[in-house]
Image (tube, rainbow, N blue to C red):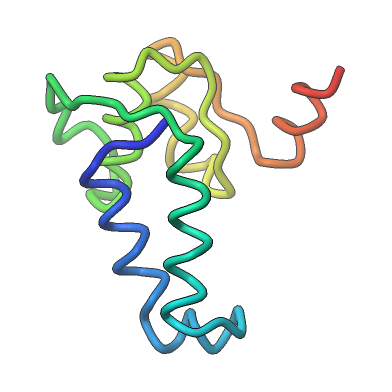
Amino acid sequence: MISVGLALEYEAVLVRPVHRTAIGLTEDEIREVLDALLSTATLVRTDYLWRPILADPEDEMVLETCLNGWASHLLTFNTRHFKPVAEWLGVRVLDPASGWRRMNR
């Protein structure tokens, strides 16, 4: 699932020079990868803003997308920040490896 705001945020972060250097891709290549990912994502309309609800304001849009899209799970490397609030709201929080193993059972 993805919202328009979250997609724009991903692009803005990934094209920063520090991130481009770390992953070894040009801006055009990053946009190609994002386009491919976004072409398979379900667009979520943000009908309700849940802010402020998390300790880190930069995480808010991710949780809002999950909640507005009625997601059952959130896969993130940042489980510590999301887990208490998201799970209280009914969204199971897993790290990507655990989520991948769970999907492949």
